[in-house]
Image 1: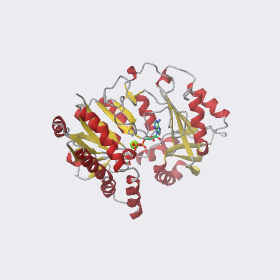
Image 2: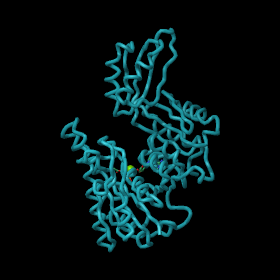
Image 3: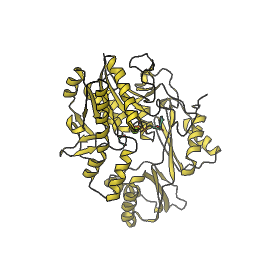
Image 4: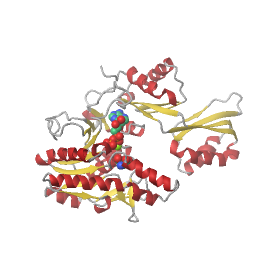
Length: 419
Ligand code: ADP
Ligand code: ASP
Ligand code: MG
């Protein structure tokens, strides 16, 4: 007997027919004698609709009310799934975040889970009741509903798995695993059998939205075994059941020691959520970087890439940096207020840029990975605007229109294309 968390995303619960299919996946595991907690998202498109209603009512609104609105989508799907499970003879009940409770901090719209009391869930699971839990939501310190940021149901699932000591957390979605890059962009992308927590963390934070970044962080810290798999697989296929064989149906996110054949590069990610800010003719003297980045940090603006050009005359230079698009307006405001003190001529911004990243643990021990990327991009005439690297990744900022070409080029230059 195992204890399982099964998480189903928006497309997997998009309508009543899809919900019946989810119930069939759950039934398979219950019939095999396992204890099952299910975490579900809102129906596909619902959260977007709720967000747009909030914005339409008032672009700047109370974040607590925003959370109350957007958390409602999951309330519908937990109850529908519970009803369907009961209909097919499986004892089940729905749980909202506050009923467990899933306690979070007070950062409405992007709350972090602080603690989950899993004791009541464990008692009920052991009696054979399936717990159907609303993803994406929690309860803040002031007893208000919070949400965990877009895609947050993945994080709910991993946190529940850690709290109840689950043997496996299965993330059912609309693709059958984690691929070497987004399979919707590159048809030649290959499914990975396994990926290390570290690489998955980089992939997610650099744009691969198949898992929310925070869910991978939590899985890594609590050593939760995490599998990404498809809800579109036939529920009674022989390989579908838990423990059906050593090779699961999806991609296992696990410790790097478990991966026998380690590639130098495991994947390519991209993010369109970048904005570039250039300060033209900044005085080239000590302390200028501090005067630019100090106020940005004071305003909690996340600066990612930074490049300072060499000055021709020794007096002035251009300074470029990137921030998430959502923070551009604030960043621009902060810089303009400090412009006189920084001593720069002009501030330019550009949102038509994308960040492409090459990720692989093998980079720790292999030289020349970055050079390969630069050469391949230059051969396609793609200009590099900024670069950042870490031990296991290289990120390159390029102009927006080259996004797909760059991803495809890098994917094939590192030998990731499906044969
Ligand atoms: P869900 O609604 O189930 O949470 P998401 O839309 O959040 O599903 O995530 C699944 C999507 O992630 C896929 O449809 C795919 O387009 C995208 N994706 C991006 N990068 C990758 C990748 N490297 N491997 C697999 N899927 C990826
Ligand atoms: N329904 C939420 C969203 O669309 C949470 C999730 O799907 O993970 O962002
Ligand atoms: Mg998702």
